[in-house]
Length: 376
Image (cartoon, rainbow, N blue to C red; front, side, top):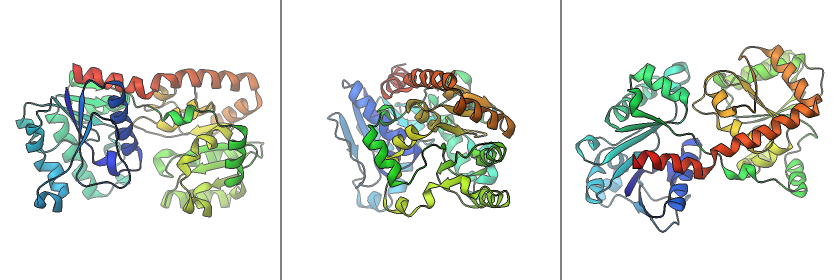
């Protein structure tokens, strides 16, 4: 097959959508070498390159298209798609180019989540209008819609009336770096670099209301423990609310915002994130809603026990390995933290179950599932 991708985020995005796009493309090219892969990139990238033999980068050629590369990506690439005689075109992040419905190529789009529909107050008005238009068009035009979780599939059915038979669930994979055990020397180096405590709880994610970091802070108030919380991630207004709560309750010393440290401005923390997970006693992810919840998998692969909520896709991602609580139950969270940190048998069982569960989300398995969709 000749398979094309909207590869803008694969080349230019440094966050979740970029990681998903790059990982999937590389995994497909490495595991299914009999196919050819065409990456439609609106402008050259100095950050990311693909070296596999069967991957071809497609850039705008006409001077006008180079000048208005966004328009080329969303409107004019249909000519190249037709000329290359693609069998499949895959929009990796919620979008498909206009006019694609006129071509015989099979059309697939991945929808990661509909958070802007569920929590509209977290998004500017104009962004919501643009997202809704793009998402609905992509779902309408696509022959198949890939949802990254049962939660996203249900949202597509309820909010956009996408026929159930049109949706395929293909879970995300987790970066294999998190399954590589750091050496004692590597752990010591990371611990010293970030001045991490000997024992700590860990939260990784944006500091926004939906992620529910305040619940952990409330649980800290109830804990009879000196173990601090290390926060990897940043935020604006909600972070200020968190800091006010900590100050009012004499908990300021109990929470370490790693992104506030000067070293973060000079260093890419993602390189050390596997070790930061491995050094943690417990990972806590009290989110109210996610499309998939990749940090849960990162922690499980790192052999770190996970406490998360019993809503949205969290039970899908955590499986039988995580400890689940209600989104507003700080008492239950405090109890869970105490149970795991003081009972070695429970902690060891969670670590064992977590690593086994995370093995279901490898790059290869993700690529195999997506290839099944292409073949079908």
